[in-house]
Each structure stands twice: as C-alpha cells, then as structure tokens.
Length: 269
Image 1 (tube, rainbow, N blue to C red):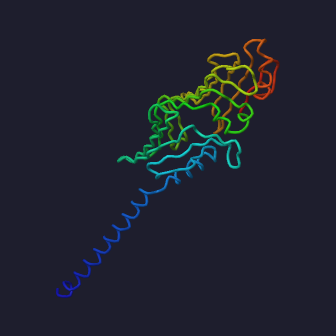
Image 2 (cartoon, one colour):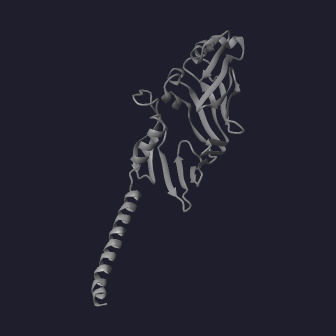
Image 3 (spheres, one colour):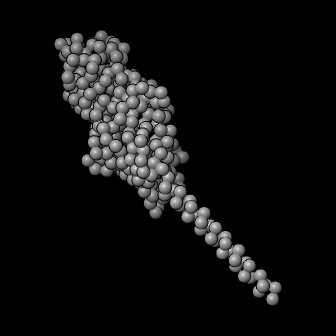
C-alpha cells in the first residue's frame, strides 16, 4: 500500500502535464485556425476555378476579409477584368457542421449573398440564396475568346431561385433554377446599339437543361443545351430580326459561329 501511495503524486503530475500539453496544442491550433490569412481563400478559389476567378489584394482573414474579384481566362491571360468594387466575405461555421459564406459587394449586391454548405452522413449540399448579383457585361472579356473579340457592353444579372447542389453516392444532383440575364447588349463589332436583351436559364429538374432566349432586340438569339457526361452540350442560332439589320450585324454573326444563310450556328460541346 505504501508503494502505491508514494507513486500517486508522480502519476497525478504526469496526467496534469499531459492535459496541460493537450490544452496548449488545442489552443495553438484554434488560434492558427482563427488567424488563417485571407490568401488561403484566394488560393482555394483559384484552384477550384482553374484560375478563371481570382481574389487579388486579399486583406483580413479566412473568416472575415475582402479582396478584388478578377475574371480571367486562366494562367497567362492578358485580358483580366476586375469587379468595380471590392468583395467582402464572412465565413461562419455552425453547430451542426454547416459552413455559411456571406458575400457583399457595394457595386453589385443589394443584400448579402449567402452560400451554405451542409454535410450529412450520405451527402454534401450547397444552398445559394436568391440575392441577385448585378455586374457590368464587360467583365466577360476577361474570359478570353470569343468575349475579348465581341467586347460586350451592358448589364449582367445572375439570379437564382431555390438553387441547390448535392454531392452523394449518386453523383451531383441539382435543384431549383438559376439564370444569367444580359440587358442592353452592345458590341464593338456592330454599330447597332443596343442589340437587345437576353437570358440564359438553367432548369435543374427533371434533368439539367439550359435555354437561351431573346427578351427583346434586333439581334435574335436562341438555343437549348443539356449537361451530358459532365460536359455542356449546346446548340443554337443567331440572326438579325429583319433583313435590314443584317449588314450591321454581319461581322458579329461571323464571329459567333459558322454561317448558314442569314444565321450563325452556335455550338458548344
């Protein structure tokens, strides 16, 4: 009994040191996580988009920061275009394992844009709030060909409605809808200003389908597409609304696609 008693203070001291060391390590990891620089998010966005979206001049931390959003055609591009104002974000974890990203931009968002990542035992879901994101159409030139030739001018609005992406054992599933509207489009390839307003919409159910429609205008655009084997397949056509408009749209139509009489054929995939 005496031997057991004599060793108990040493055992207790060792246990206390272990707990103290664990506390220090846990505190250090927590401090590191809370102070991760904003550049970490910049690197993640660049990798995820293959260099097509960049967060430059990042300030703050991973959890609360700001940066200049730049659209690019990828590494080595010389046609990068920046959003008119800086992008601010807040990243907040939830008790259930959720992760909410709140985005603000003075130029383009009337209210915060929220992306919520929700894990479960069998799936991972991303929900995007319905806040419209409005930006100048010339940002598209940053994507390179053919936009840097078309040089579009006008206003772009990205709008979602109950849009959600879910990754599971069944692959990627989409729900809701999202649209990109281009208002008052003009181009350096035509003296016709504006040429019209257009919408590209994605309907997620029952199968993901894209549709290009003309809202109004003297340049008529239309087409349909679908997502097949992880690739977008799209076919459409562009043409002047009247024969009188064909001469001022001829150059632009030739850039958009091969000609078939008065029409230009649009094709992707």
